[in-house]
Length: 143
Image 1 (cartoon, rainbow, N blue to C red):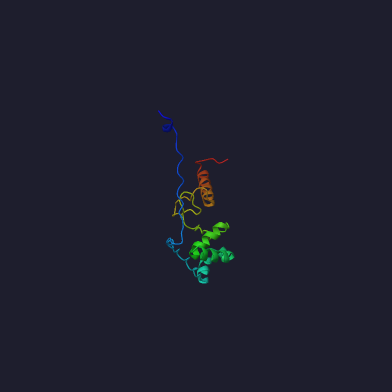
Image 2 (tube, rainbow, N blue to C red):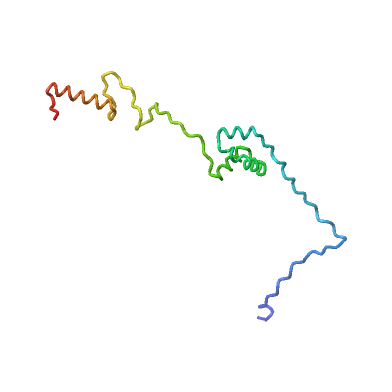
């Protein structure tokens, strides 16, 4: 082995381009023009405000967001209201008259001769009367 085989030669520096007055100009790259600001209609915001009443409090921010970010008025409204913890919808309405499964507020109507639903004031009166009838017949003794 010779000493020249074990040595490493330094890497050559990359060539830097030399610009001369005769060199051709670099190609011009055209950047696309920024999109024109979006037109915001107040009627759009009024429609959104019906659904999200707090939107009127943030109208300027919503308008700015819609124009700068090229968002729809509804999207800008949702973004701004969410950022300000003001995104609330209308209060849900619950129909208490309709039966809703196992824990109903209103028991279904009963037919003639049918015992009322347990736990209702009607049931207490109904069963108290039944017990009094049985006691009068001598079938049970109430203390």
